[in-house]
Image 1: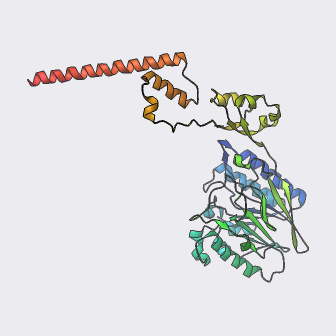
Image 2: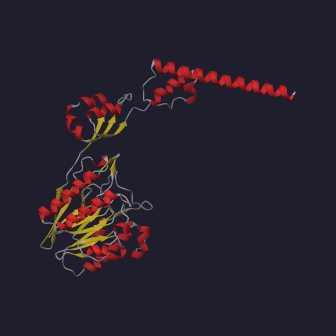
Image 3: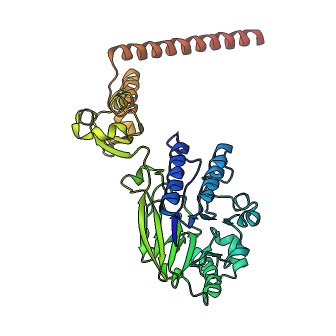
Length: 392
């Protein structure tokens, strides 16, 4: 028997203002091809199918098409909800769909009820929000570890005498795993981590939530997200996990996911980055660029994008000037209004002093303001004098 473990599709997600639906559709096309080519019996998706509780219509249509094609290819599909999904909406029609081979598990009442594949049993666990699930599961306390222990108690009770490999599908943060910036914090009262021993006794724990593919302990693995969603995922080898059940054991190997556009993080002065011949590959990448110029270059983003047109994030890392040695009053003492205005312009532009034309414009504005105030004062004084004469 062969299965695919995947998770964290986050359908509908954006990346610094760029929609990812095309890249996500490419991954789902790839997944269907793998199911067909490898004779996959089941596809396990460990939560965060959607990126938001109310997905857009084109996102729903993409999922509907992908699930139909996976099932047409002969695979049983098992989905469990993640912390980004609406359990109620994702789980609509689950009992009817199960009869066709699509098993969607979002309900606490179904915990411990397996999807029986014959040579293996699958126990899908929806994302368990401690505050909402602790009492229903009979957990000792409202923590992630406690509610998962309670859920796993139901799993072990059902799996005890089945005599075939047991696979658990869960969405959680397991101790020892490496996080990324693109994951939503699921901590409650600062306690989110679940120890690996919670999954003791199962043959494979197919985990979701963390976007970096990794094996936390033997048989406890995150497939990771198939599409990168933050620059912290630069260098990730996006993939799915192929599980083979043979002789009562579960073997794992990874299958690389397609990459529509890779990520690059560039750091240096603007001139150095534009001249660096080793950065040829970054010209077609989504780029995060950090400029280290002592003076912030004018038109930096425009110049960067001439060479790296897919730059999405531009940051500046400049030497911090120590101003603690003198107070603000001391720094502005004896400076004229025009000097203060030019100093402010220099500061907000990161080291670009005012030009002669800008000094002239500022001087004209200051003079106009002074004359305007004087006129208001004269008008106010005349009005006051007239009122006093009238009163007399």
